[in-house]
Length: 173
Image (cartoon, rainbow, N blue to C red):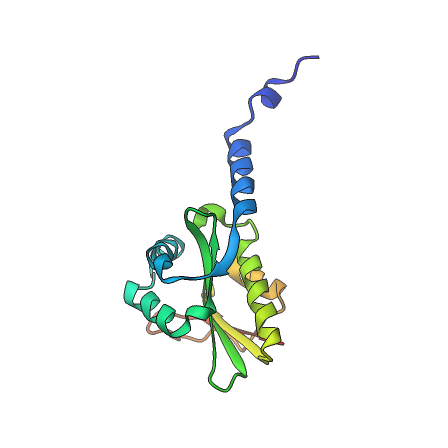
């Protein structure tokens, strides 16, 4: 029996999906190292083209909170990161940034990063995790709600300055 043409010649979408599955299966999560800073900047610029971190912000975050940055690495380049910072009293942790490169959105990588952060924070006796999210970022809101985060009030107008509205979401641990 002869295979149908679509079976012999997979669509471009099918080939891309297979490549993406191979790539995501190779990704390892690890702590950031200084040599990662240029790649970290690239990931942030791809994920947030309108408002990426400046290099000095990532540099300072690494210098101060280097043990609080996890990256997704395929052995050649980075594809995501999460930056999380605990208050000095150890009670509250803020997720400062979660980013996955656009070509890998929808593959569960943001969830993977967040689950690891939450696992670590539970061992540290952190009581609450907080984050901000742009009100129009439906994918992020859906992710955070699925992890148990809830809204703290309504939209905070101008939270990050004029026109920079945010929701604050919290999760008790």
